[in-house]
Image (tube, rainbow, N blue to C red):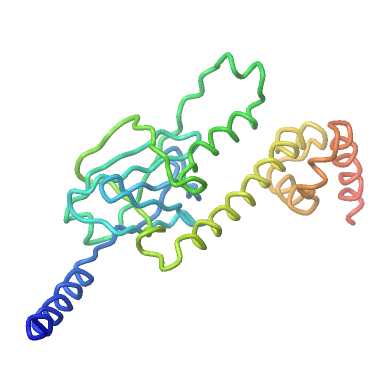
Length: 237
């Protein structure tokens, strides 16, 4: 019996090594189809192998795939893109271009503002980060050339729960940034200061309020804050 075990172990080791060496990854960057902007935190789902991840802050993605796998890319405000992996896709990097989803007026928008609606959509989009269960919306499908995918958070990671916790913190930080952008928007700052172009960008970056302040401040407080900052800006302070 022990003799058979000794024969089996080397064979098992060879099979594991071959399987590991056969791992292939799809890599590239994800862009907005209507511009050159890269898209961060795009939810990436290898449907075939049930692998998930998010694109990095610069839009980069990487995921373990095999030819024939089906992969979906989805993000709030963009149409979900799905594709079938081919061997040719694995020989180079492939960019993904997500098309902006046309906004439709819904009755629910009477009760919630745009930020709140987007926030709810983001929570649904990233449900897999919080409860390990999310089915992407398939709005159109592609065969052949396409792109993208990311590293496998759960199967490739030695400590998946730490990976999940890291992503939860990242998404929480992004949600705070979205809220600041909602209260301290370019349109609102422009309306008050009349600044445009590089001057507007410099002003908004220099005087960007904190998340805690935006949560506590009333609308009139934000207005006064921007106006006071504009006076300092004009004095060169």
